[in-house]
Image 1: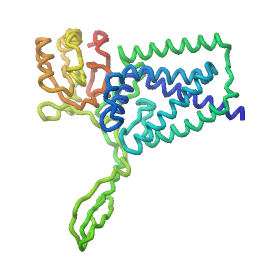
Image 2 (image 1 turned 45 degrees about the horizontal axis):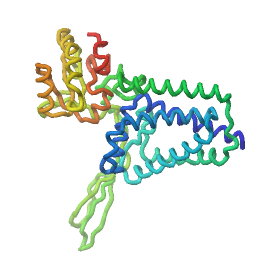
Image 3 (image 1 turned 60 degrees about the vertical axis):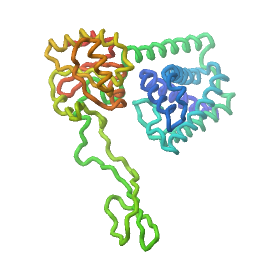
Image 4 (image 1 turned 30 degrees about the vertical axis):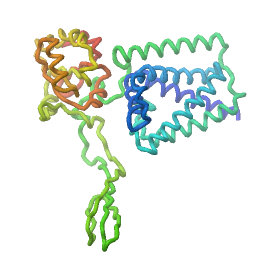
Length: 364
């Protein structure tokens, strides 16, 4: 029993450390996921949306530290209760999300390992069983280091966690798990390979046959039925192959310029998901970088989901005429964790990518 306990202890501790770390390097990304949970149609807790970022930072640091304290056997009572309460809450959350199909990806492992809602729930059920076992057999939770040394390890972990969070918010994540990492080829990442598995749908056809409603299900073909079609519903059975980048586009005035812009050998793309949420002083700070790119024969574009009114505010403040293109807000948030963020591309390949704080580090 003691060895089984230690195995469970290592598994839970390692999983909490890994889960905390992959979200800790990208706290802004996890805050977006919390906003999705708090928003309308899910938990309906809109008053928590403004607190999503500080909550995200707290949760991921707390999660990682719990993994460390469990492995160390440090503060055992606090660790056991915290683990139990946290996993009970997240098991409920993932079940709610999966059963009511509210959130398509729980964000449990950030962008490192995307999980479907049901996969997230089953993972939490396994963790709940293991944590209940650790909770009940508490006599086996022994410290592996003297208390003063364990506290030093805990403190060092806390400091490192704080630094990683700070770096992710004020620069960019130290590890980029998203498909828009440096070196990524955007056009290739949008391509569906030949022979890739296609999506499978069930079509539920509702007919009036001799005055009686009947539903006939097929996978694509229209059923040969002597009756009047009343309605039909489409159900996704298997989404098939989805390319790493599937929601990227560069549009202007209703036209798609993605292909031509991705062929540019010198392209500076400034991605700002919401212009009204970026400070004017930020744009003034990066203006010299935009001018430098222009003088180096780079094509400079601004990618945003904001409309003409917000675009005009930026142009007036900078006394210039920036070249704006439209894209979906969620897609832009995925591209870069900065509002705005800057990317240098060569024929669709991301060569450089920085937070606006580090715009001067770009090389042209």
